[in-house]
Amino acid sequence: MTGLEHIGLLYGSEDEYVTGCVAFLRQALKAGEPALVAVPGGGGELVRADLGHDAERVTFRDMSVVGRNPGRIIPSVLLAFQRAHPGRRVWIIGESMWNGRSDLEHPACVQDEALVNVVFADSEAAILCPYDTVGLGAEAIRDAHRTHPVVRDRNGTFQSPAYADPLATAAACDLPLPAPPPHAAVFRFTGLRALPELRAFASAGAEAAGLEPRRLADMVIAVNELATNTGEHTDGPGTLALWAERGTLVCQVDDGGRLDPLAGRVPPPDHAAHGRGLLVVHELADLVRIHRHERGTSIRIHFDLPGRRAACTSRPPVTR
Picture (cartoon, rainbow, N blue to C red):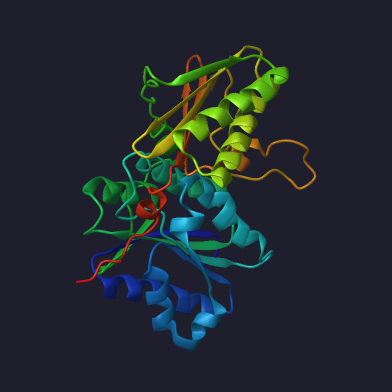
């Protein structure tokens, strides 16, 4: 097989999970090609144990860390591994959706899975995406069928009749964002000269919300990147809203600009002087939601407050 293989692995037990993942990896190892396992929680250890000594030939990453923000998965996990092995076919197990993902994260995961088909359309890559049919809801399993041309379960491998145009699927997940709450702090800005005052406003709000110092610095950088894009690429003003909810600091930047669906997913060429702002935002934030509407674009970024991160970054594999 050549070209892109993007396969949804539907598993209902720990045995099915390990069997499906290891069979995939043994294909890669037999061909002498590079393989990556990026799955959350203890799933990687189960696969590693079954592979035995062959696990030394496989790269393992914890997706609950590297893919905490689903928007980080394509550029910082999948493409990064591909670029580390130029000219070779890569084999990747990437589990982006697990039991414990929030309802807010779900559409971002679906967008990520759909856009894999666009970003890797001309690539030599085999990408296997496990889905827990017991722990995940029915909607997530339906989305697995919509975003993967090929689906594999205990009965075999088949073409998914529900697979749809990936850009249309991603666009369908571009959902309106709820309005910021009345208690949100709001800062209106115009142009790049407002950035120092905007950074001070964001920093004060984050500190008041209890964001830890290291993450506070990350948040200020991310907000500055979004506001810089507003100043450089739109003619009108922008608005920053900031508030805390459900253990999360939320920052939203609204402006009149328009974004390409792949913005923030594909790094620009190394020689490019611009085009990395949204990539930086995805790398720093715990969740990024983008809504394109008739008046422009709203970008909402989330940063977990202390105590929430541990609850969001692990999922035990199913055991039956």
